[in-house]
Structure formats: structure tokens, C-alpha cells
Length: 137
Image (cartoon, rainbow, N blue to C red; front, side, top):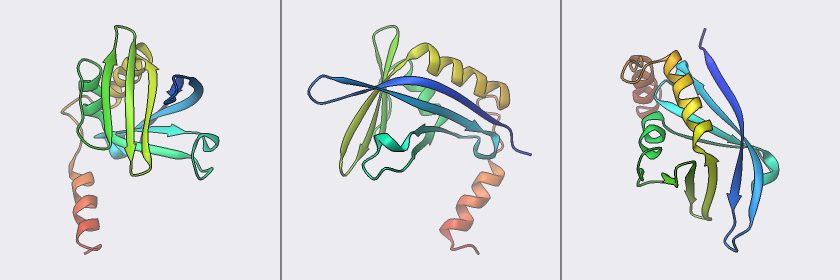
């Protein structure tokens, strides 16, 4: 049975005009998807009124806590000693969400208790990924 870690936390969506909107976010990690982390945003914050989950590499979160990281749709960078900015990029635009670094670090360390970095079982994930690429063959 897969072990799942969920950590509710508060964050702030930064608007283009300099305002901030407090938003609850659930940080999720599961050993069934050991290389990834999931940030779950409530439906009321999305453009289509549906819950939004962003999934990206756990190593990206680790790297972004210490220095700017990411080149794709998720980019993470420190913002002073106590805050971290996570940018989510889509064709519709960019959302910048500010987190307390301590909350992200606590979540990451708790995920390491489930699967140590570099100790993730990648075989099943690789098999699922290859099967989906090959059309379920």
C-alpha cells in the first residue's frame, strides 16, 4: 500500500499589481510517485473553478530552496532567507506563489523519511511511463 504524505500550508498568490491573495495549498508526496511532489490548489483560485494540482520533480523543489531552479513550467527560487517563490507557467500566463521556506523544507524532509533522495524505486514509475508512451503495450 502506497504511503502518502499531505501537508496543508498557507501561501500567497502575488498579483501583477502588487497585491497578495492568501491561498491554502496542500503539499503532497506519495511513494507511488516517488520522484515527484504535488502542490494542490483549491478550486476557487483556478480560472475554470476546478482544483488544480501541479506535479513536478522532488529534486526541483530541493534545488529551488537553495538557488533559482527550473527552466520549464515550474521555476523555484529563494526570496530572502525565509521565503520561496514558485512560478507556475502556462500558455494563459504566470502565477507566482510565495511560500514560507520553512514549510517547504519541512515537507521535503518529511518526504525523505518515506523515500530517501536517490533511494526511490524508479522501476514501477519507469514501467508506467514507458507503457503510456507506447500506448499501453
